[in-house]
Image (tube, rainbow, N blue to C red):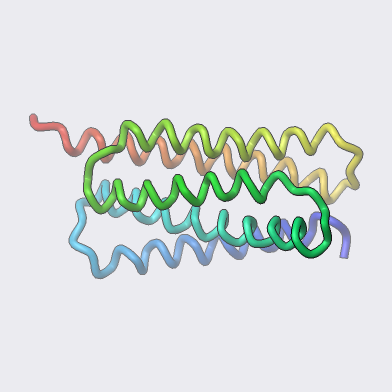
Length: 155
C-alpha cells in the first residue's frame, strides 16, 4: 500500500468513530446544548489524536523513526482532556480556546513542515488533508467553546 493511504483511511475511520463516541458520551449526561457540543468535539478530537499519537509512538519506539506527532498529538490529547472538563463544568472556555489554538497550531505546523520534505504524492496528499483537518478541528472547537462561553453569560 502506498505511503499515506493507511493514514488517510485511518483519519476517516477515526473521525467517524470519534463523532459517534462523542454523541454516545453525551446521551446520558444532563448538559446544555452548548456543553454537549463541546463534549462531542472533545471526544471526537481525542479519538483521532489518540490513535495518531499511538501510531507516532510506535514509529518512535519500535522503528526508531523520529515523529513529531509523538509530542504534538500528546498536546492535543491534553487539550481534549481539558476541553472535556470545561464542558462538564460549563466554565473555563476562554482558557481552553487558547490551549486548543496552541495544540492544533502545533499539529498543523508539523504537517506543513512535512510538506517541505520530499514525499510521494499520496503521502503529500495525506499531509495536506491532515493540515486541513486539524485546522478545521481547531476552528470548530474554538467556535463551540465561544458558544459555551456565551451561554454562560449572566444576562
